[in-house]
Length: 270
Ligand code: NAI
Image (cartoon, rainbow, N blue to C red; front, side):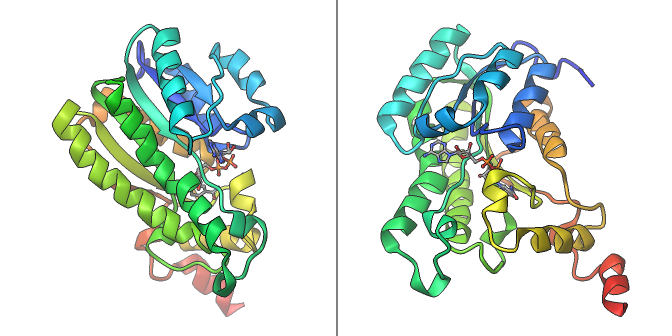
């Protein structure tokens, strides 16, 4: 439903790889609510993915940027402000990758070079994005910056490996930079902790289908879909949530507050 919640707002959306990506759904919903934005992804992902299709649908320009490169980010923010015609109201960081997970490394035998890469891509890039935005003074007052995270930052999940440490760091960066950006520019910074969702990044985690069906049963409302996550992102980019900042917001159908659920008891009784 279009409510014009983001009418006239401008932004940057990171991380739409294909139509399963959470960022892809966020882009479509932002467009539906009246926003204009640029789309970005790592150059290699742009070659492999289908982002041009999304860009045509959203009438967006695609600007390549490896989110670990400050140089690329500088170019991205400069060009985005230029193309969109003013400073930005919102930024979505929807980026995650662990070479250790991708290559099936056992947690007791992590490759530490790769672990640093995991941190850089999945967490420190969020700091770099905000630091570039601050230095270029690219955000408008009362702007909103969001990153996507997972509850493995607080609790252990087998096979999530060093992504758990990356998500813990990501959430911590949101708090620290949230305090700074609020003070400097009244910009809010939050993370959304999303249910397991069938995407390229999600399905890279071992036993992901089991993860998903367990979470479904442990969530009184069921798993939150990527579309529902996109709706939540829209609300956090809108003016209706101006005083929400430095939060890790659970978007998980109630999973994080459940000790046991009737659905799981029923299943275990069988
Ligand atoms: P996805 O695979 O569609 O998106 C991940 C994106 O990160 C891709 O577009 C990829 O190209 C991008 N990326 C990787 N390295 C990059 C780099 N160096 N520079 C710029 N972009 C880079 O998967 P999904 O699930 O949409 O992931 C989006 C976010 O949601 C990630 O932060 C993920 O951890 C988070 N999340 C996903 C959940 C899931 O179960 N799928 C659950 C909770 C959070």
